Amino acid sequence: MTRIAIICHDSHTLFVEDISDEMLEKYNGEEEDYIKDNYCISGNFSWDYITSAQYIPDKKETEVYDIDFASLAE
Image 1: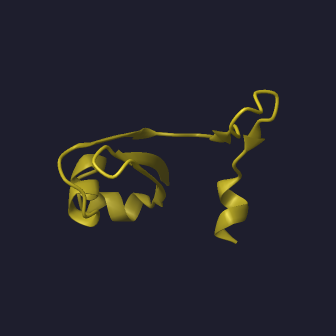
Image 2 (image 1 turned 60 degrees about the vertical axis):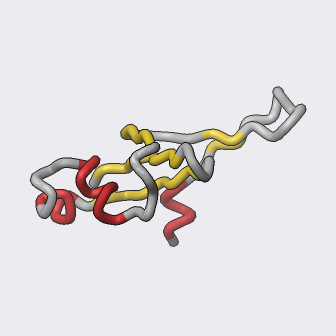
Image 3 (image 1 turned 180 degrees about the vertical axis):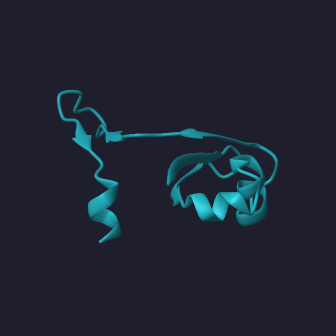
């Protein structure tokens, strides 16, 4: 399993997805090919692997919330 974050720079949208190894095999292991085939975004995007994420609310620098993707999927 590979967890990736994709940012569409045109719509300023963040996508986070867990992609199975089996699914990536269909794209010869190329995450970028998978993204281009499965997302309706222009070529103006970037992506990377992620292992964790945090959310920091506006004007609350001392409050940091870990995003637990496993619990979101349940």
